[in-house]
Length: 140
Ligand code: CMP
Picture 1 (tube, rainbow, N blue to C red):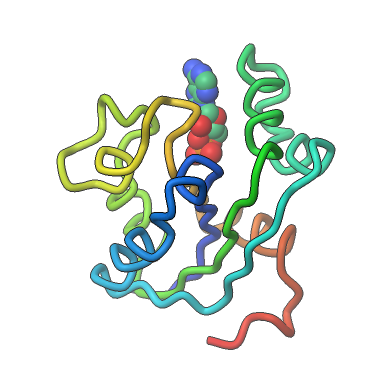
Picture 2: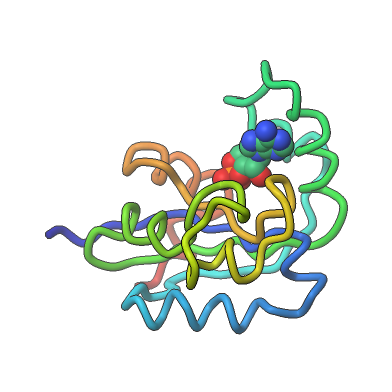
């Protein structure tokens, strides 16, 4: 196994419900280290840029409106196999389909309000990390 970094976002539904710490505990229980973290509020234009890959989808405008509607916590997780491990503990995109005990099952409310985002592969993780963080902010 190799150590990797992955980009995580705790979404507006989760920050609004004050469960940031509970979600961070899940990462730490899975031996993922939070090596960078900040709370920000995206503009709609920034959300559109981040989710550009979904720009042809019917849910794109609603997703970007939602992601810029309230603060999010953006973070870099680090550890063995971090990309796949984070996706495993997040669970399926739709909380209704996510395994019991996953973050989205326990904290998500709908496919859009699904508590967390995580990078889908190592290459995209590096792109997504660079979207939010400078190299100086990555201390782990
Ligand atoms: P995320 O992992 O942040 O990546 C893209 C997001 O789009 C996804 O989580 C969901 O929140 C959202 N999404 C995916 N499919 C749908 C859908 N069918 N309807 C609404 N939102 C969706």
